[in-house]
Each structure stands twice: as C-alpha cells, then as structure tokens.
Length: 224
Image 1 (cartoon, one colour):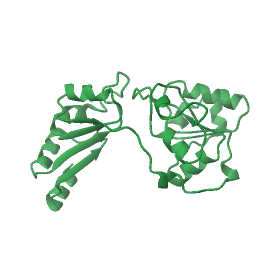
Image 2: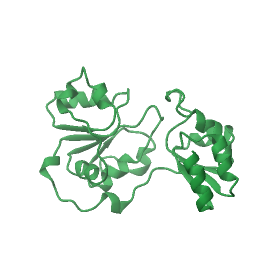
Image 3: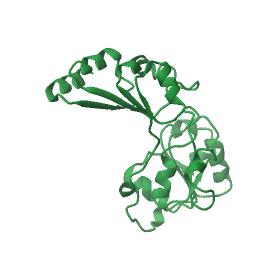
Image 4: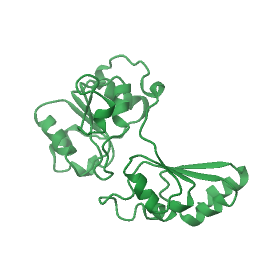
C-alpha cells in the first residue's frame, strides 16, 4: 500500500485502474484519490457469493464506495455493487485476444490428450467427471492449483503432476486435445468465463457445461 502511494505521488497519474484489489483498504484508496486521480476497478470474482472464502473480500466490499467506477464479470453483481455504495457499475464480460491464443502452432504429439482441463480445483463435480474419464482409460491432462492436495485419495494421482501452465503452453495443450474441458466456478456463480473463448481461439474443441449464457455465444455442436 505504501509503495503504491509513493508511486502515485511520484508519477501523478490521471487514472488508476485495479484488477481484483483484495488487499487495498478504503484509507489507502482515499489517499490515492486525494492526488486527483480517477479510481476504477475490474473485479472478476463474485465478492457476494454465499460460497465465497470467508474474509477474502472484506476489505474490498468496504471500499466499494471509494471507486469512481466498477467493471464486473457477471451481470448479477451490478445490483449488488450498487447496493453496497458503488457510484457506477458496468458489465464487462470475458473476452480474448486473437493474437495471444491463435499463433499457428501445428500438431504437437507430446500434447495429444483425449481430454484436458486447465484450471483450479473446486469442490464441485469437476473432479468426479475427470475421474470417470481416467477410469474409462482415456488419456487426460489436468493442470492448475490445489489439485495436488485434492487428489490424495483419488485415481487422479496417476495423472500428476498438476503444475499450472500459462501462455503458449496453455494454448498448445488445448489445441492438441480431442476435448477441451471447461467447468464453471460454483463459488463465483459463473455461467460463463474466459476459458471457452480461449479454447476455441487456440483451435481446440470446446466441451463445457451447458448454461443459457454459454448458448448465447456458440451454437451447440456447430460452433462448440
């Protein structure tokens, strides 16, 4: 916090934009605003979810009124932000950058899997579905956080490690899989996310949960 205040005092920006500012309190933000800067925020988690991690969003929720504008990941959060004192809220759904994901990589045998999921573990149905695939003999790749702890008593131990991947490796793995899996976060009440766009932009085959929002983006079995 102190480092950011010093940086702003030195650089005198007109606009300060935050992404998921979990650790900044209202007092810090007010000091930043006192320089004359506009403060905006993009929050891709659901801070009001009934399943949220206890205490994780506490500082942010208390500081919502200080920001000049909020950009939220899901439409349902608009009214919740306004009820908690937000001055202005705009829905900013996930997007992708074509150049980042579609970089023309040809097939790579070391990444040829039947099914791939790149993302964090969550206590929902994702683990059960992947266990069924592995039990049926499919070659499956899972990469992401928390999986190492979650699979200690599971057949999924056989497909370790679960080291997170990013950038070109992320795109290359999804591009070369027969099925690019996407599970939506129940903690965040997601019905859509950035991953489906990234899978298709990478040249992969999207297999995701069916939601009304997902079906507004792609036609089933034709585009996804």
